[in-house]
Every structure is written in structure tokens, then in C-alpha cells.
Image (spheres, rainbow, N blue to C red):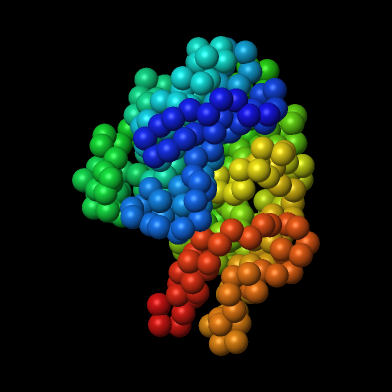
Length: 300
């Protein structure tokens, strides 16, 4: 079910009612021309990005705050219209497209892992000046107000237990959310459809093993930050997305010694996963695949 779309700086936000307690806020993938002019498009709007809210009664949890403050305000206004008077924000990791809307929640508790808080503080000056990944700057960067105490914390949102789980996939500060009573996993950037964005090539073996641990959570419905709006709206992904990500990274790690495999297009590279229906093909990820290959180059 889809709620009325909301307009914001950066384009329309599609408000998705995914279940009684779960909402998605999806932006991007409105065209496939692949134009990239800033970090807002690169890896975010060009590929589609979805933040999520868990709501029960007067309490809400917002998982990531969008690519700008306008997106964050849309999320906040929506959950407040749905009855939430107490909002807790959880950050999945420190990358800009997940924290840029924090200022819309400056009077709320913002929870992050200690590593996420450390990386945000480390890069704060460059983020606020727009020199880290170029403009637009995120100014002010509203920082976490609390850090988690371990690899597994549980928050209570209304009557729902919400597990915050640490993983090292995509980045070394990843937090995912599990809603055990609903069988739901909010995967953030640990998973993507069509393929994951490699940012730490030297840690790829760890990421691959961590994907097996992620699979062991046994989630029935998986909602990534970057994926198909139609699939997310239809109930999300199953564990095939985890297997597809693991297999892609495994083959990618072998490409430095296999020139023939490096020459394949993305569509050819992930054909087995496409044929099984675990992922869908989205042409802008061809560019991501080429960047991933460059990351794995012996000369990188």
C-alpha cells in the first residue's frame, strides 16, 4: 500500500505503508539516464534510496534520515501525523546519504554505534564544509546523542522489540535492525539490489563471512536502503538477496586473476542470480560494477 507521495528537495518521496508498523520513504530511480552530479545522486537517488520508520502507538523509530533535511522533515511530519509523539533515530552507518537529514530530528535522541559516531566526528569538518565528497555540504551535521553499548542492543518502540545488530558489511560500522516479532530485517547498505557498493576492498573476506552471519538471522522479509521500490512495496526481499550479495562479492574477489571475468558486463556477471530471481537488473549499477572492479584491481 502506498500513501500519497510527498515533494521534497531532491524529488518526490514515495511514502510506502509496508505493514501495520513499518513504513518506507523511497526517493530516486525516477530515471535511468545515469547522470551523476554530486554525492546525492551517486549511490543514492540514482540508485534509489529508502529510509524506514517503525511505529507503534505514540512511539516511532526512524532508521536513517535521508539525503537532505527536507527528506528528514517529510519523514518526521509523516510519523507525527500517524500519531508518534516520541521519535528515536537510529543511524545505520556514517555515509552521507544516511545522515544528511539529521537536523530535522535535532531535538530527538539519535542513536549510533560507537564506530559510526567516531567516523562522523573524524570527518565532521569536511562534511560540514562540503569537501569530503564535494557539495552539497551537510551543515550543521547533527551528531548522535547516544551510542550503543555492544554488538546487540534492544530498543522498545511501543510494544515492539527492536534489535540493533552490528555487522561489518559494506562499511566497518554497519548497524542493521531486526524486528523479531515481525520476521523483518532492515538491512541498510549491507545489501543492495542489483549489487553492493564496495567501499572497503581490503575487508572483502570479512564482509563475505559476515553475510553468512546475516543470513543466520532467518529474516523472512528483508528491506535494504537501495533496491527496487516495487519489490520493497510488495513485501521486500527474501534471503536470496543475501546469497546473491555473497556470491557477487566472492566472484568479484577473484577477478584480479581472471581477465575474462573482468570483461563481463554486470548483467553477464550476475546472470545466475538474475535467473533465480534473487535480484533484478537496474542499468545504473553497471557503473557501480565498473567502480567495484577498479577497487579490486591489483594496481588500485
